[in-house]
Each structure stands twice: as structure tokens, then as C-alpha cells.
Image (cartoon, rainbow, N blue to C red):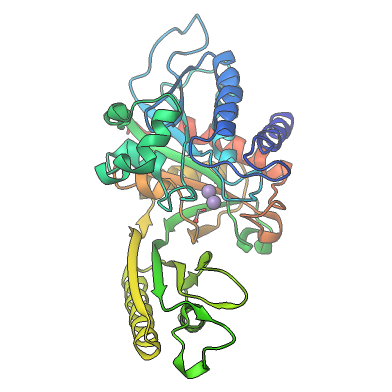
Length: 407
Ligand code: GLV
Ligand code: MN
Ligand code: MN
């Protein structure tokens, strides 16, 4: 497995050079470098005898439908999806998302002529991060039929057409009734496994998350002539609110809240800001706690704006409930990790994953690989060869356990 693991890592690193920003890795929904990633992975999958297509949401899909061995030529009637995403955040690392896709293909390669009675479909989702349109999970939502018309009729539909696909075909991307399970490999993106000295973690649940845009509208004016008490400064209001965001999260166990993007108009040193758009990303394993915190932060923004003569607008872009992984599939994954001789650690994911979109529709399980330094969404993101080999070993055992489970 070590050689295959080394090839998996080399493949992820090479694909990280397919980018919209030379010198760093940035690959958004259906961009030109995404086309190059599709091509490279398609060549590999076709060499392994997989049937490859791109669905109308831009997801790359490869199916190992038939047993590779001529002697055992037969078609399985149950399908296991192994999937993750191919898009990245700006200035990303080489492993977030794409590692799970490359591991899926590597598993098909590792199976070689072995012939489990399962159809394997490896999917590289087109969009999970929400970078291009501020809305995440576009790829996986197509599989479960929750891509709404408003979104498709927006820039998303245009990007789909520009990629040579037809948004009218999105319903054909839906999950098929023969799908019995979904498995996602992903780097942990946090420090827990490393701190325990464990290579792998089993995801129990994924924290819910909300994403919003808050727009603060004040009055742009001259920075030298407008007295402090006569200003309606949109940046000052937003800054005060951002302080509340950090303070509330700091004082609420398990809550994480982030203002990761702000834009300012007119954005000049000697002009009081007339308008600020600030994002909020807020997450907690308990939906009630997340919702209560969001209400509190909305009230804080309203009070700050009222006091400062600022108009506030709030647009919700994501309200994703926390999702548990399937206990039966997670049990099989736990068995596979134990059989492979690795320790068990169960974990709640603070990061969002495509598994949370699929899980309400198909039994889903997730395996985390340790993230050295806990670093992710950063070019220094990495993985350890032995951990990738461990994930491959566990993946193979899981496939055979699922085959035998008669799900
Ligand atoms: C996906 O990377 C997320 O933001 O959790
Ligand atoms: Mn990510
Ligand atoms: Mn990811």
C-alpha cells in the first residue's frame, strides 16, 4: 500500500498545480483548471476500466460497473459511492477534498481483479466550498435534488452552460435507488488526531452551520471635515459587531463563528465608509445553540446599527443542520479500522462536508486522516504517507465488510 499511498499524494500535489492563480492553488466551480483536473482523473479512471462521465452539475463520476476479471464477469446490483470535492478555497492546500476522490480511484486500482459484489462509483464533486457564488455544496446537492431554481437561474446556470453542460439535465444527476452507501475520506483539518498520535478518525456527526451576509449601510463622507459625532461610519459599525461575533463564540463552548470576508465601499483612506458587506460563518454540533447564537448576533447588529444611524440588511445563504453519520455503516468502518490494526477515535467534524448533504438520503460514513499541524485551508496542508496507506487498507476492508453485510 505504501507505493500506492505515495502515488496518491503525488497525484494530489500535481493536481494542486491546476489553478486559477499561478503560484497558489485556487480552483473554483467549473473553472478552466477544473477541466484539467477532470481530464487527468478521467484518464486514470478509464485506464482502470471505469465508465466516466460529467453530470450536469459538473460532478466527475466514474463507475466500476463490471468485475475486472474476465473469469468473474458480472455486474453488481448494489452501489457504493466514494466521493468528495474537487474545488478549493483561495490559496488552498493540496488535499482538502481531492484526497477523498483520489483515494477512491486508488481503491479501485488496489482492488485490481478482486471482485466484490458491489458497484463502485467514485465522484469528484464540482463545488463544496461556496467560494464562487457564496453558496456551498452545489455538486452534492444535485445528487439529492436540492439545487433550487433560483440558484440554477443565477450565475450557477451560466457557469454550467459555459462548461458545455445543460442545467436542464441536473435531475439526471440524482442518486439511483441501487445506492446503498456513501463513504467519504477527508483530512481532519484540525489538530485532534495528531495530538492523540492516531492516524485515522471515525466521524460520528458533522456540526451544523449557517452562512450569512450582513450589509451595513451608512454614509460616505469626507474623513477630514466630518466631526466624529456626525458620522454614520459603516466600517466602525461592522467592526463593533465583528468584536461581538468573536466574543460570543469565545464564551460559548463548542461555538465557532467567523467573519472571513468583508468588502468596503468606497474603500479609500480619506473617505468614511458608506457600505460594508461582512460574512458570518457560524457552527455548532447542536442546532439549537447555533440558532440561539445567530439570533443573538443579529440582535447585536441591529442594536449597533440603530445607535450609529446605520441601515442593516441580512441575507442567509446557508442554514445546514448538524448531521449524524449512519450508525450501521459507521460500525462497519469502525470494524474495518480495528481489523486493520489501528486505534479507534470518534470525532465530530467542525468542517462541513458533502457527506452532510448525502447522509439524509443514503447511509453515509466518513473517515478522517490526521492533518499534520492541524493545518488546512492553507498551502501548508499535508498528509503522512503511512496515514494514506492506512486509509487505503481500511477502505478495502470496508468494501468487503459492506459486501458481506447484505445491506
Ligand atoms: C469546508 O471546508 C468548510 O468550510 O467546512
Ligand atoms: Mn474546505
Ligand atoms: Mn473539504
